[in-house]
Length: 481
Image (cartoon, rainbow, N blue to C red; front, side):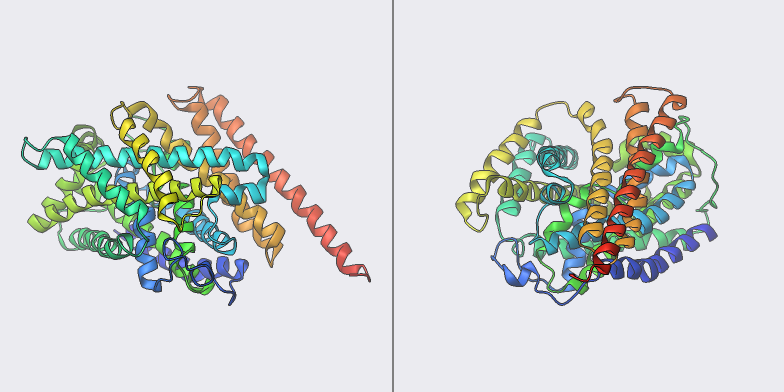
């Protein structure tokens, strides 16, 4: 219990102290934001800060900080460390930078930002990579909630019907102005997500039968999965997730002041981390250890475990909250995934998204592709999502590093993005070398290659940084300048 309380306190201090440092490095000012300068009535619409925070939270969260945290808890309480420090030093920095850099570029997507700061070849790669990742995400978040709703409703209402219903909702959420559906529903569901976590945390404090274990560095995974790199891939939302880089540009189009950025982007990520921390603790406390937790996840799936924990700890109210959480939250991730894909394709095709006709031209084929993919077996493809997600986080952090070196007020501040970028480079490379869906190499081969890959990228960063610093000194000493 002490470790859990300390972890919560560290997250709060991280927001107040490190979040302020990150904001200072970026140096927000009083320039006009796209919400005001563009204000197209569709995607760029001014929003109040509290609403932007809750929408950003639901955009980036979905069921990620619940499902991922439960799976990560199978490694033991060591996962607390990854959630806390991964979020403060990595995830929240990632979300803040991608959101704010997007805001300074008119609300541009991570694909466009990658092209601008890492070169044109990266632009084309990231356009394809981002759209495929979002299409995959959106499709899975059609099938999983539809299957669950079908189980909870009479047999004459089949899963196919619920897939159609969800797709109709996705059409509306993707097409309509952001303040019409997302702006009205998301704050409500965001509050429910927070209440759910607070209630579970309260139950663990009040009910004596639940004991949260203290932090240990031991690997307690029943299947003997190594902590490195598997835990860092398993727990994405709640620590660091590349999916957030596709979501932050949406709120970058809605904030009315750059100085709101720390609350909206850094703050929402810290809230998500608190939620993840609560569910990771709940997993091991409720089942009494990692073995029983792993067995429950295997037998009932993440949704079943969430329902069992919520219903047992909180009674019938908890059961209702759990159903809302495991049905509504995936849907809210799916609709914003398709909306982000529409925006990226709009940039790519140069179709003005203010016009409903242009939005239809992109949205209908996009959702049609999603509908077709729901008929396929996504089990194999979904395995690649986790790796693709963290690879996107790696790229986004290198984009932020390049931005800070080229356009940042403090070039040395690029270190705060370069460090987590190098770390995620090692995670991503090591995982794909070791994983069953990758090259299935041993850790004796994968570890040195993964760490070496990250070291090479960091050396390149150091060289570029050093040369830029020398050039800056020369320019400052040149009387012409």
